[in-house]
Image 1 (tube, rainbow, N blue to C red):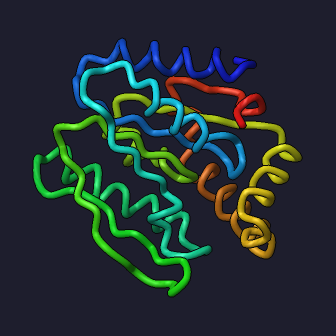
Image 2: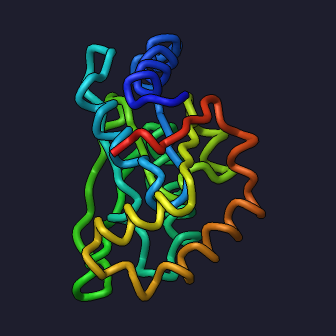
Length: 187
């Protein structure tokens, strides 16, 4: 898909086709690909009657070396308990203090969107209703990511990309995607 409107339309159509009123949608892809933009637009134009809860994995990763741990936290704290009908949620990581912060409970009766690098692990995709992979040109992605964080991401880019490459090699998320989108047009 090439345009932002076409990408969003494809995701909205896929959500409408799901057979559950409270679906779990995972949006994954490399840093700067357009995942957050797509997730925000999806929430704004959500086609089902109950508004979704949006969880950004940037709020969950336990620091810059925490991509794999963040993915596991989504499985164990959020998706598995939600599907079991028990207390589900996520603990925010305080990036300033570099430690755990407050707990966020998630209503299991609401649709759930989880977006971020590492969202589509094998364990998570088995629990999800829709998996969306967003990618973009490496030069575009890096420029977006570094501009967005106004220098905060700069010293960690290579380390993060290495973790992400390891995640992709180990988990094969693209092979689990229901939709694969070109995020170049997403801003």
